[in-house]
Image (cartoon, rainbow, N blue to C red):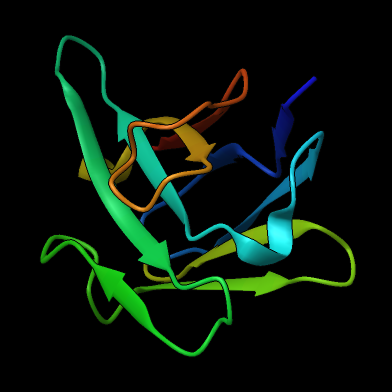
Length: 116
């Protein structure tokens, strides 16, 4: 059974940082390009970032470029999203997925709330 479990969300103030983690199982993580997507209240899913299965290539949405960093540890089957200089508009539930376009299997998500 494919499983993805996100964690690391929380409530922070603008300008602060969070690091999300996504522990995976049930599929070969080392051969899957992975991604993060988010869903803000009342909005559609927004693709955030993707990473090649080797970890060598990354892609970001313009809205997060320069502030977020995606990474992975293939030895731990774990995907990460380092989020710096958070803004109120980053408030959303964040999901990791096992497809680079954000349309793969996803976990239950982790809530990120940015508010002053």
